[in-house]
Length: 265
Image 1 (spheres, rainbow, N blue to C red):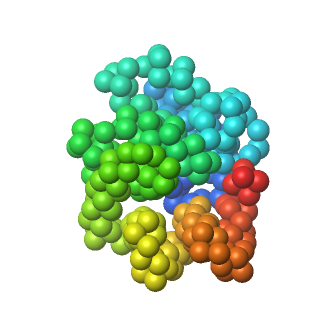
Image 2: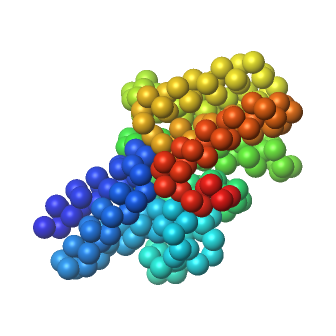
């Protein structure tokens, strides 16, 4: 039973990152959580509740006690879990929790929080249990986006620039291994880097490639994110008509995903 529940949980996690609509995801994850409680599968339940909390935050359906950017609410208390479990004794929970905190913090523009969570995973140093799994590349993607965001405002631009380049290198390797799942992430991060270097024509081509590949993969939330970032690029370039169109499409995709919190943000 324990192994079956772990497999069911893994399927739920992959469903989240595959862009499954949030109402359907929440229904499935709630069912699995109930079974875990019934069979006292407590360690796996804690990881499951991390995903449940993140999905609730994105859905904007209530249950996020400190706002959508923070992994705190009815199902998960980030700070409490950090104090209760040491990284070495419960590394799966620790890394999944910090992965989801990094993602939430990026999407809701709390970049310092996202960077701190990303640093706790240590994937670039090879010490992460994510290494070799899809979770590694998802973390690297959001780590890179967070570094780009911080490099615009922070004094230590070299540190974040180096992090972005390291992330792009890993994502390019991942793109070769799994082009359907990772191409859009690689192209989006490369587009953001091109913008910082004022290579605008190249950046636009990369944004469009990211959108195209995300659409082909059917990953709703990252398809929306690619349009969102392209929209902010056009705003920065004072092309308000193009910006409006990209943000409109992003909004529609977030609505299709079921993320009221992103629409309202």
